[in-house]
Structures are given as C-alpha cells and as structure tokens.
Image (tube, rainbow, N blue to C red; front, side, top):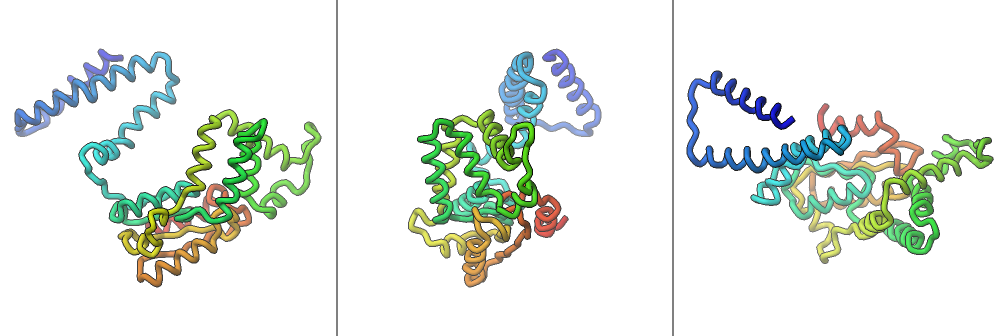
Length: 288
C-alpha cells in the first residue's frame, strides 16, 4: 500500500508540472510542503496503513474522512483561526451545547438552531437527571434501568398508545411496550460505559448559560446570529413553553429570533421520527 501511495504522489506531481504554465515556489513554501508531506501526511499515511491490517475497513474509512471534518478545528485550536459557519445546529443536549458555543463566540455562526433544546436545564430536567443519577449509582443494573426511565421522558402516552396499543409479545409473554423498553436498555448497555452515561447525565443537568451571573437577556443580546428555536409541541423533556419564553425575550430585544414548532404526538424524539416535518422546517432556514 505504501509503494502505491508513493507512485500516486509522483504521478500527481508530474501531471501538475505538465499542466502548469508557470511554477513559482518560494523556499518558505517548499519548506512548509516538506514538513506537511514528510510529517503530517507522510506519518499519517504510514500509521493508517499499519493500522489497517488489524482494523475493520469501515473504521479505516471513517478515520480517514475525519481529517476533513477536523481540519477547521485544528486551525481554530492552534492558530486561533475562527471558521465562518452558516449554521450551528444541535438537538437535545446538542442544542444546549450550541447555545454554549454561541454565547462564548457571539459571531461564530450566521444561524443558531437549537432543536428540542434549551439554554438551561429546567426544574423538570434537573428532577429527571437527579433520578437518573440515583439509578446510575444505586441500581443493580444501572445502565439498563436508567435508559428505560429516560425513554419514558423521550416519548408521550399518545405515542406509546399509537405504537403498541396494549399488544403483547406472545413469545416472551410480556407487553410489547415492555419488550421495547428492555430492547433499548440492552442496546445502550452494549454501547455505553457507566461512567460515560454519568457524564452525559451531568452535562444535561448542568446546561445553563446564566451560571456566570450573566442574564439570558445579556446572552441573547450579544449573540450576533439569527436564532431559530425549533420546538416540539408534545415534548415533555425540553418543553415548547420554555422556548416560547426565550422567543419573547429575544423579540423584546429586537433580535432576529424565530420560533418554529413541530407538531407531533411523539414527544422529544419527534425530531428523530418526523423526518419530513423537521426537514421542512430546516429547509426554510437553509433555503433548500
């Protein structure tokens, strides 16, 4: 694989040389090219080639694609170059993180789009994360039990009734809703470490843009982005009422703030279920 990459590099150089009408490269650029080719790219390809022998091909592909994704991040971290963003979007706790980023860097993005999220953990969120913490610390089966409880806050009674209708799993002799909850508990148990779940629960409980004694009015006023609040009418986790309060604050401050509501019986998870509806809302924002 390494010889093939070497030949490909030589061929690319020859093609570039033949197609160029004028080549002017300063010693400084040659030096930077040498550093990038020998160390950044060279060692990177050597390591990925060696690792590919024992790593699944799909994972190798994901790792190689991550270079393009992380490129702007390296520029931001090491030379303080802030990339211009059209939109900063996140759902649920990701929306809370989007609020945090917009507050820290008010000119970071043209559009701030928290979906089924809030700039704070409400009393309801704090209460649920408190119960989650107790389950994670005291249950004999913490990940499964905590996940089963969490799934109840992500949906609604109407959603459960529509999907399960009190039907039973005859093979297991339990209700299908019970089988579904057990499935989600097992699924997360296989993917999550206990400490990772505790960390996520802590982050969810600690979302708060006013923790540094800075009012939400001040936070919203300083943000230069257009703010698009996307709420779900049946969400009992991050409620639409809280987003409406934030919307009213923004309007009083004459900010470019917009409120979008997704109508669904499926609660918090509706933005993952109602693909056409959420695509319609986001399509208007992205003008597609």
